[in-house]
Image 1: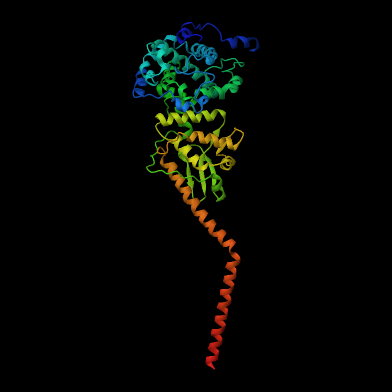
Image 2 (image 1 turned 90 degrees about the vertical axis):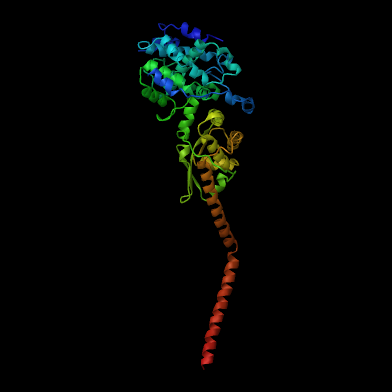
Length: 434
């Protein structure tokens, strides 16, 4: 199982160098009260996913490289990453040791240990080992929080010092690029989350910054504009891609309306990509349906599964559920996927449009029809109205086209009869005059 969190921190020697730095050497030439008040009302946000959901796609909810938090800690296949967590700990603490010691971080986190515990489901098997061990639990939070900060900072270039070796497999630029998608896939699993309070506490100690500046730093590395703050990385990620987690009014009466994307294109509808969910709309004047693009590959597919479960369980809005419902109304076959993919709405690397259809079917299995907001309902209704109007107009035109000869013939006969009647009237007039 490797070192426990307590052993990892207690045995850490800040005088030692990172092993990858040693290998590369020959080639080198906030305020605590404010934090407490901010999170005083924080509720349970990190859950164990129900077994019946996991059974459908067991690999979608299980970390493959790194455990974050208590739920998957100690699993044999994840032990190797503990070495890299220890190296992240070493770099982070050596950088900040002028301002803070190891114990400073532990002490500050201990002040909020109750709030941190409340973020996790307590009455589950995975929490038993931490039940009466505040010290071990806090040190687990510290180790995993520092790993998150260090890993996310590589991509954003926010590390105070470029103090990782170029050949580093996790935190070096090339190694990070190679492993990024695989590690990030684990970091966005619902059961693999860490409370935002852990990260903000760690940064407030290490940087000596105000709460506002600490939040600004975190928002930069956590996929979210500064005005949005999530409960954890997955929540922040969702708010970022969905446009900030705005609270849309829930639809009162919503019926399933399915109009395939390929048929819409046949009747002149164009698709346009927009940045977020709250920009979805249908412009009837230009027949343009604006939708956020959806990226579907081996990694992002699992992100959608986890995001959907989280939103339906505790999310403050139903944007993702509504978006999936809207996409489901447009996708009935591979030809619909092709139509959306050609317009940039769907970006897929699954190999076939049929595979995307299957993914969408999986995503919609737990979609709650009653939890669809007004944006989705209004957009579907407007598209439906346009579709039926254009379909009727096209049907009328087709009837005219197919019956053109009969129409022309009838019109000719009517014209001839009219001419004959006119001639007869004129002749009769002259005859009577004589």
